[in-house]
Amino acid sequence: MVTGVSNTATTYTGAPSASESAGVSLAKNFDTFLTLLTTQLKNQDPTSPMDSKEFTNQLVMFSQVEQSINQNKNLEKLLAMFGSQQSSNNLNYIGKIVDVDDNQVELQKGGSAFWSYELPAGATSVKYNILDSAGKVVRTVTSNAPAGGFPKGRIELAWDGKDGQSVEQPSGKYKLEVIAKDGGGKTIDGTKVFARGYVSSLDTVDGQQYLVIGGNKYPPEKVVSVYPAPTAPDPSNDDEEEEQPPAA
Image (cartoon, one colour):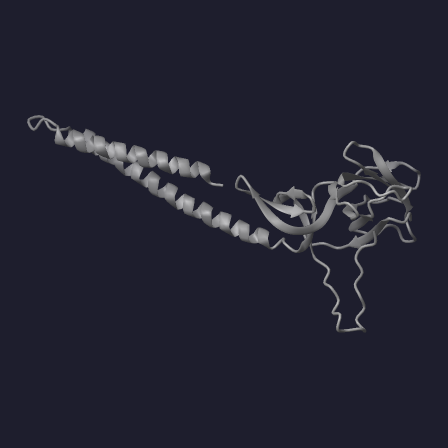
């Protein structure tokens, strides 16, 4: 395995602005209807009062408008409760490692980048291509299956941010391309690649919340897996075995 790119097997677990506008519109219609009905009753001819059937129909309309407004207010409350609950759920991502349905990650200067991938059955060799934002391959690594085959499930790939000549690459967006082949050298379809990173915070843009992972922002629905972040060893315990981060 070429230094600088490593693999680790892991297991995983798997805005109501429109309603506000509707509520305002219904309320206006309701007030207008009430004003018209009251005016009509005040100015009707005493010798020829409003037909009872017509009056009943107008009262029914009055009731329907009132019910629509009340239903809309209840819907707004439900949407507000749902939005609050969703925001609370998104807070749970902060401080965790996640895989998102995207093969592009952000490389920080002097840092490392991480992906995860799933191989199709029958793969005996894998080629990894790391491409920059222009589509240029900056690093290529080929790996043959160890005895017993490749690990099952999600596999992590860590990149130290350098090309094949150990030259540090500039910060920016990079993609991972994984090409799996069988024993006969034939390419196998079905490889899935995901961006992996640490959720540092949440950001809200136009009412939509995003997870901030490195320099990228992802909507929460892009998350496919969540992992607890590695815990730092207790410095007071000299005998405790230190947990090492993924090799880069």
